[in-house]
Length: 126
Image (cartoon, rainbow, N blue to C red; front, side, top):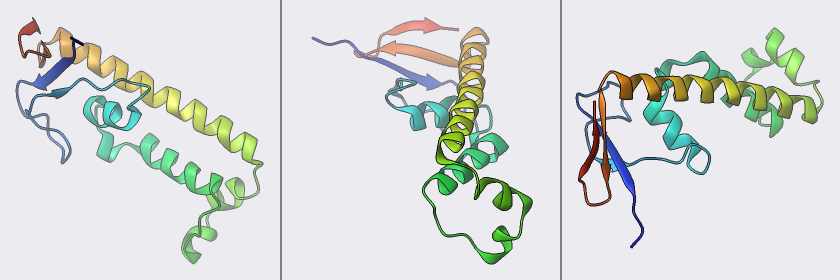
């Protein structure tokens, strides 16, 4: 039988996407979005996350409103080669991952989350 690790916050951590429910511990690389949502210190308000979303728009040549097209960011990124935008994305993703890993470690050390096995037996309670 395959064993899974679950976790839950002991107290509601705030934000729209997080709560105190028991959920599978997301793999940081296979389930990047969930890992970031659950463990970024301020995912919804993060400027890094907002900037990353914008970079993906530039990479995918998405349409922008006229007011965005007049900004310095638009003038800078819209002329940038795709490889350079990908490099910017990778660098920003590393910053976001670092924030998430540090916060996850902090949450464990402070006992704000508990880890449970697939049978919901506590394996760590901080």
